Length: 346
Image: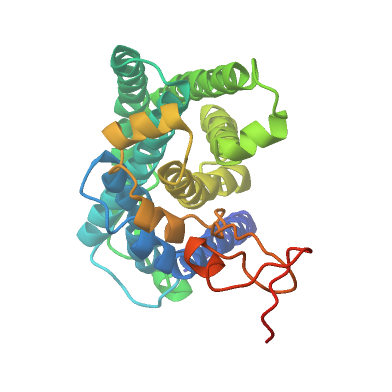
């Protein structure tokens, strides 16, 4: 295959960019697998005993969808020095980027929305309003974006260059301008949705902070604010990058960075948020959580599940040195003195 210097330079730059993107995603994959393995015991003790309600379903979706995404992307996106039929490459791309990645985002955002509703303590009709607005904006973001997903999934039989480099698939990369414009429009709709979620989170925390004497840091820690604001910030940054994607190459470093954050780190934050809300002791939030998300907590199990609760020791009064205060039965067996110390010897 004869290559001009311009073609060789373009191939070299493309290969370098592709390798950088692969390493970025690989770091996210390793991070998520490490998190999964180190929190499996907590999942089995806190989540698995729950009935199959909304909270458990959302937790399982946010926790196991990234693992399925990793299992699909590794043999397709990385140099395995094996060749896959191009129809399989297309199907795996549609499964990962067209379905699983969307499930990850939607399940995490719904978990965030339900937890915010629980913290707000509002009536069910407000939750229905939140869900209706969220559904409309989500469909408005995903339906136009599927045009570019379909076009990006097109593949051809393996090329000589991709086979020599060790890649299993050859992508056509023939994206129409109308599909790119639709993706940008979808990005702005997604940005609007995230801005509304962020505004809702800020308003709820302002309401919960106002009218009570605790510090803002305490309120944020008590109500899982770190997870909520981190999740919202990542989605906000990802939506901005998605809206501005047409100004850069389709596979670029900012896009890969935020795509990895959204697909791997957001599920971690969402699952931690659900676990923390399951352990909450705040009465209003606990009532809504017990109705919408999880079973009502039981005293016998909560003491072992909540890592922030210390066991309550029984208060015992003492008389003398190391001697328990006598009960009514023991008083009759001891001889009180003027000083109040029992005269029996050890």
